[in-house]
Amino acid sequence: MTTHQAPPVADRAGAVEPAAARPPRLPALLRAGLRRLVGALAVLFGAATLAFAALQLIPGDPVATLLGPATTTPPEVREAIRHDLGYDQPVVVQYLHYLGGLLRADLGQSYQLQRPVSDLIAEQLGPTAQLALTAVLLALLIAVLSAVATAGRRPALKALTAAWELVAVSTPSYWLGLVLLTVFSFQLRLFPVAGADGVAALVLPAVTLALPLAGTLAQVLREGLEAALGQPFAVTARARGLSRAGVVLRHALRHAAVPLMTLTGWLTGSLLGGTVLVESVFGRPGVGSLVLAAVNSRDVPVVIGVVLLSALVFVVISTAVDLLAGVLDPRLGNR
Amino acid sequence: MASPGAASARRAVRLPPPAVLAAGAVLLLILLAGLLPGLLTGVSPTATDPVNALQPPGAAHPLGTDQLGRDVFARLVHGAGPALALGFGSTVLAVVGGAALGLAAALGGPVADRLLMRAADVLLALPATLLALLVIAVLGTGTGNLVLAIGIALVPGYGRLVRSEALLVRRSGYVEAAVTLGVPRRSLILRHVLPNSLAPLLTLATVGFGTALIAASGLSFLGLGPRPPSPEWGAMLSEGRGFLATAWWLGVFPGAAVTLTVAAVTVVGRHLQQRFTRRSP
View 1: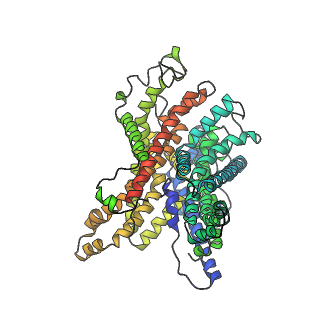
View 2: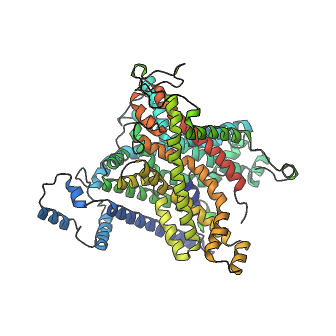
View 3: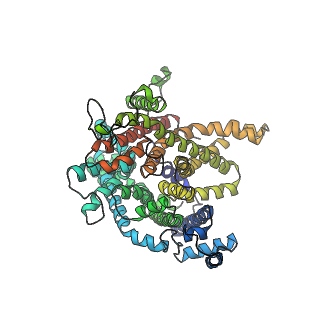
């Protein structure tokens, strides 16, 4: 069965081009690692260029936008501000200036709040990181339990599992959040309706973010386990008298673990998109709420700041996961 | 996977499995609601009735009424059109953009290929929701910008697929024969490479329609798409979220409609993928 739920994820597998394989292991690994690092830097450079282009595309005069709708500022003051911010320089100089700022973690100034974007993001990072990490761990737990329990079992059980995976990947996260909120907060009053205070407030948002993730991960893991169970080594282990559960836990899981880890890394790197909706549903503070408010007030520098942060998180996690996969599975190491 | 053999050769037309048929039937019903909502309900989706506001599901209103007394079932049926249009519009944009990107990369020479694929890598490094939010922040809110935003966010995935398919087709015997015969480049692309890359593209687009629908209704739920009087499903949820404490039906049914549509389209799309995936180059 092919799993093409999200086109981007499905196609990233083709992102790595095979390099010439040479006999010594370590240099090959090192070379593969360097290739990945260069690729990662290229992606970050591209994201920064995209960010600069987006800033240039905002209609209207940036100085006027910065000053707000009040038109009392005299023209010579406007010119002074324009000069101070470098807006009177050629675009190429502005671009280099912008890239230099990014290297010093300077993401520019918010149009609406008149504060550095990096400060605004740093303040909101805690609740979002907490939510995302909890959701990933929960999703992994659910996926492993579900896949280990059902891989290679009777057709009826497998059909049931396939059905829950389908529902999990088809359910919009914001709707799942609304339903959980209605049942557990409004009807049963088990969890707070909004906020980010304490563990109780984390449960529903984390489950909301985790379930669709768990569906995707469980699908991939179950297919990996079933492929491994069909291999000769699995048949041999069974013939030696090892139980089905033993084969799954001691042999098949190891084989299916590397693709699972890679996919988990990619999905974790993309989680900042999902937190926008989940934080909105549960009224949680965080980077998602920050970016949504910024979109509504067209505070483009803040949105760009979060986009760049997301690109950095994605590149760091996926590069680390790729390198680790190459070490864990030597067959991948030569790529 | 079905085993190719005498049995399948004897029956020219193999019926898809029952789950796929059921999903197809659901999809047809939703499509009917989208195209001809009047056939499924005679009730107006915008007629307010304050006396009967927030009525639970019952005989008079099968799915209840909202805070203005509007019939939820009628709004759901009439909302299918706008909801499907958002998903369809952004998928078409993404497919066309992806086809252009993929063909340019595969046939434009190694330099263009490298540059375009690096650009696709950059876009793939960003979550689609966040990329769409960036486009909306720059262009402003509104239904058209929402479709454009999601379309742009989904382009690179299709672009990669078209590129790899086009590379396979270009190396195939019939294209090399056409090159040898002196077929001009333009008709080579339009008559050979594009049509033969099309089947996998369209099957991916079927599954991708579900992704686009979830993304579009999500942004609409955030208030970035169709404005309140519209019964689009995400907008309905956005309006109903303030009344969840007393009226659970406002939060349940529009989202269930999105989930049902996405699940049906995913089942049908995966079946098509299995049937039309290229076995070997």
